[in-house]
Image 1 (tube, rainbow, N blue to C red):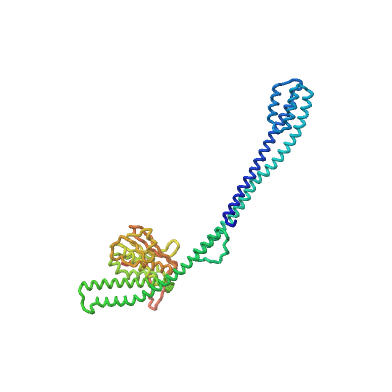
Image 2 (tube, rainbow, N blue to C red):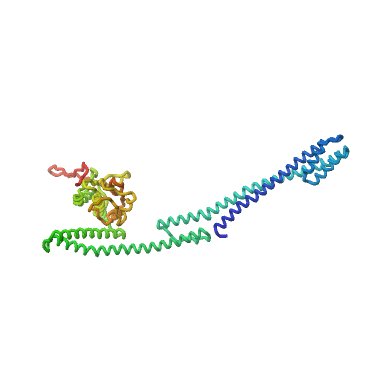
Amino acid sequence: MRTLRSRFNILFILVIGSGVIFSLAAVDSYDRISEAQDSMDSSFQLRNLVGQLPRYQFDKDYFEKLKTLRNQLKDENRRQLLTHVIAAYGSRNPQLLSRRAEQYESFEQKQYKIIKETISAEKQILYRNGTLAFALPLFFILLLIGYLKMGLFNPLKRLSDRMLDFLGDKYSFKFMIPEDNEIGDLQRTFNSLAQRVLNNMDELKDLDRAKSEFLSIASHELRTPMTSIKGSLSLLKSGVLGQLDKSSLRLIRIAESESDRLIRLINDLLDLAKIESRSLALKKDWVPLDSLLEKSLEGLLGLAETAEVRLKLQTFKKSIEIKVDADRFQQIITNLVSNAIKFSPQGSEVLVHVHLNQKGDLAIDVKDQGPGIAIEDQELIFEKFRQTNGTQESQLVKGTGLGLAIAKALIFEHGGMIGVQSAPGQGSTFYIVLKEWRKAPVEPIVFTNKSETVNETTKTTPRAAA
C-alpha cells in the first residue's frame, strides 16, 4: 500500500467506481420516475374513460378498449377493480355500473396521490444521485491531482534540482531519508550514482595531478639535455671540430631543427602544466598594444619571408593600452599569426586588425587566406594535440597541436575570449576579445628655454609590417 502505483490505482478506482455507482443509481431513479409517470398517465386515461361510459346503452368499442387497457395494467388491485367495471358494463346494469365506477374512481384518486408522491421522492433521489455522480468523481480527481503533485511532481522537482546542483558542483548528501516508494528508490539510486561519480572524480583528479606533475618533471629533465644537444650541434655546424661535408652539414641542420621543435614542445608542455595546476603567475600591467603587436610581427618576419607571405597591421590612429602580461600576450599573438602564416598560400596576406566590437570590447582579428576550417573542426582545434587535416602541403605546417590550446588558456587567464570564424576555401579569422583596455594617456607638452616643443605625434595611418 506504500507504493505510488497502488495509491494511484486506489484513487483511480474511487474516481471510476463512485461515478459508475451513482450514475447507475441515478439511471435507476430515472427509470422509476418514467414508470410512475406512465402509470399516472394510464390512470388519468382510465378515469376519463370510465367516467364517460354510457350507462344505458352498450358500446362494443368502449367494451373492447376497456379490456385492452386492463390487460396492460400491472397492479393487481387496479386490474380487479377494472374487471368489475367491465363486467358491470357488459351486464348492461346501469345501477351496478355506476356503483362499480364510483369504487374505481375512488381507488384511482388514491393511487394518483401515491404515484405523485412517489414521483416527487424519486426526483429528489435522482437529483441527489446525479449530484453525487458528478461531485464525488470530481472530488477524487482533485484529490488525485493533489496527490500526484505532492507525491510525484514535487519530489521529482526536488530531485531534479539536486541533479542540477550536482552538475554545478553543489551536490550535498545531507538529504532527508527517502520515502519508501518509487521516488525514494529513484533518489537512493541517484545518491549511489552521485557517490560513485564523486569517487571517480577524486580518482581522476589525482591522476590528472600526477600527470601534470609527471609532465612538469619530465619537461624540466628533458630541457637540460636538449639544450646541451642543441649547443653541441651548433658547435659542430660552426666547424669547431673541422669543416664538414655537405651531407654531414645537412644532417646536422636537420637534427638542430628537430631539436628546436622538441624544445618548443617541452616549453609548451611546461606552460600547459602550469596553467592546469593553477601555478601560472601573470604579471599584468598597462602596456601599449601597438608596440606588442609590432614586436610580435617583427619576430615573425623571417617565417613570413620564407613562406612568401605579407604581414599587415591595421590599428587605431590613437594609441591604446591593454592590461595584460606582456610576454604571455605576445606569445598568444605569435601563436595565432604563425599559424596564419603556415596555412597561407604564397603571395597572400595575413592581416592583424584591431577594432572595437558591438559591446565596446577590444577585438584583435588575425585573418589569413588559407584553406579554411570546417565547422565541425572549429571547436576541436582549441583542444590539446588537435590539428585540422588541411589541404595545404607546405613544409611549414608542422606543430604539436598545443599552440591554440595554450593561447585559449592564456586568454581565459586574462579574462578574455578567443574564437574562429571560417569556412572551407574562404580563409580563417581568429579573434581575441579583451575587456581591460584604455586610451593611452597623452604626454604633457614640455616648453624649453629655446621655445622648442616636445610632443609625440599621433598615428594618422594604419600600421603595416612586411
